[in-house]
Length: 213
Ligand code: HEM
Image 1 (cartoon, rainbow, N blue to C red):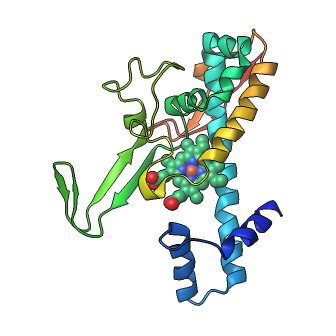
Image 2 (image 1 turned 135 degrees about the vertical axis):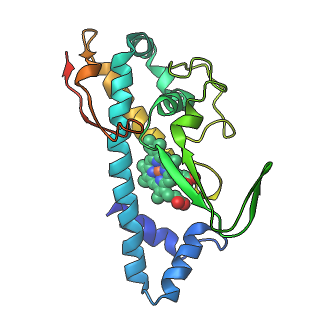
């Protein structure tokens, strides 16, 4: 209901030269009517939100349990969670996005590299977000890191940057407030009992995480 109203309010005011505007024009070009296009805009948002937040929440919880010092620091000072950098640091350490690719539709130059039309670049997200040449002790959660638009790709970048990033950070903030309020000091997770989907390339989805409290 909320999303339907939201789409209804913004649909007729979308600005040209934006991805969403172009997407709607493409839908119209293939004969879709406004009602159908609006419904098709709601679907991906609903699916993206439940999919991404469910998976990234599990990584967030695991890190809060795995690193008691980090958890206690937040418990002593919950206002730290008001700082977006703190939440981004958890997402830098682990989140559900592992790999995406880009395909060149024409010749493209990136720095010293030239990509020919039809070639693909595969981006391995943990490779950038955990790069030891960029992050000192990359596996550690460190709230004092300088995270900025230029040095991480937690939410991607350029035109296709994640449309849900503000919502994601707000969601994790509320979730984190609950976690630190209720997780007892004795909480423990045994890494050997955690089961992952896709661990052959990178930890993709936590499918089982028995926690003892
Ligand atoms: C922890 C949470 C999230 C992370 C780490 C994340 C990360 C990402 C990344 C890396 C991309 C690719 C950007 C690119 O291609 O350069 C992306 C795209 C996208 N995300 Fe998220 N996301 C999160 C939450 C959400 C939520 C909550 C929503 C919806 C409400 C959402 C909707 C989307 C959509 C629709 C795209 C495609 C955008 C496009 O291709 O133009 N994401 N996200």
